[in-house]
View 1 (spheres, rainbow, N blue to C red):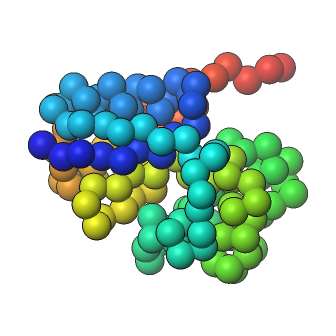
View 2 (tube, rainbow, N blue to C red):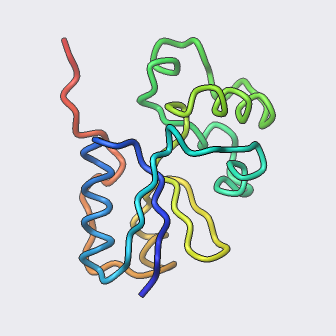
Length: 132
């Protein structure tokens, strides 16, 4: 079983579900606060690999939902600069096992990588009820 450094937004119900699934699958989860962790462009970029820049972002971030930041229209350097100033923009969770880093919670990828005992339904959709 793996030891996973799990960078989360404390209090996020979805991250709590994801951690519970990982722990229930026999993994050791070491939770870290994504908002207060000391990031550099290099350490943050390691989680995104060769993925397209627009996939690096948390689509529920207020700055993205308002249209202030349009991920499809910015460079990787701009994206990292925005994220270093405003960690709410970072797609969550960020997970690290040994030297491998991943962003987001794709259950198929996570299962192939470290194994899962079950699958979450809609594992990346925020469970918070939007204000109307």
